[in-house]
Length: 118
Image 1: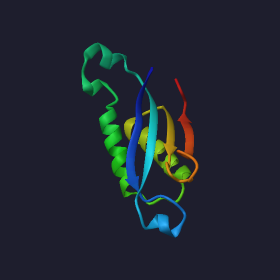
Image 2: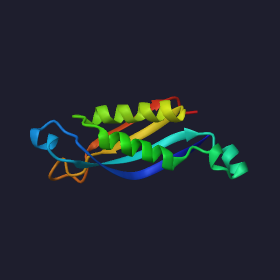
Image 3: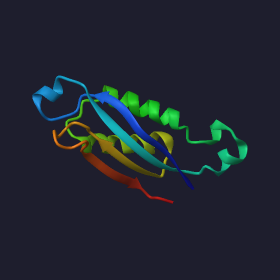
């Protein structure tokens, strides 16, 4: 097993509990690590044998852009489940940040791991 990763995927969405947050789009930033058997792709040099990080990123982006969650915790859980279910990933580690949520902090958010790391 190897780990396929995506760093600092920035997506605009409606997120938050306050009325003003429900009326605007804010940026969330994702770091994603996914367990994947990369050996076959490495041998064959064929995208069909790889976990396609562009496909994963495009799917997450479409999902998050269309969402309107109140909590980053809920969004993180839904993204992890989507990746595991739709891309047959056995383990995922996800960092979901909401930069600018606190005036004196660069970023806030959650880090979750789901599944079994091979």
